[in-house]
Image (cartoon, rainbow, N blue to C red; front, side, top):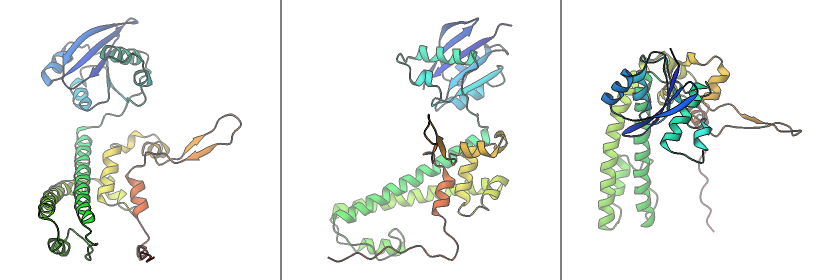
Length: 297
């Protein structure tokens, strides 16, 4: 049977299709990016066909619908597909053609396609990180209100605890600022409840995972950091060596050398959760360094 390679440039509502066959690439139009449209497209494929898709928001769902219908589904890493990212002429048809050609030449850098459990864990971890960022944004808005109204620092350790909120209610703020603070506190309470619900689900997932329990034996790695690592890595057995795993997490230093110059090393900019955990941890028994007192001029 003749080998065919399909390139799909996926968008929100449709996917542009290009087909490579016998060294010639031709356009095959568009397919609707719905489960029904993708099933019709999958029914038209042969078991020996190959499909190449660029990684995007709905790539996982599309790849899962096509898996088992064709010989191979390759999800391309857009950061490594330089032929598409740096093309002077970049259209849907051109991108689909390039994907089909690279797949036919076995020159398409693919990414690992996570299973359903890992994908669900990634969604939960990402949702938790989003809620934490929202809470930080709301707290910063409250601090900004106090700052612009010349309100001194709260004597309580936690401005958003019981003592801090009681102190906050007594501050001489304009009526509109008081209403704004109340609205921000109500939003904080809502996000705190959502965070509690997500943490319950993540806690159950952590208790059922041997990898999470093993990672938590590392100093500075709590359940949240361990779950983030497991969600990012997925299957630890897919890495042939520990060096590959360290490189995937961005923890290995870069080495650059050109000509007669000595090699230079530098840390990778893509630091993952283990780095933040290691930086935030301190030896047991040591108190954090106190902030020096303000100097009076």
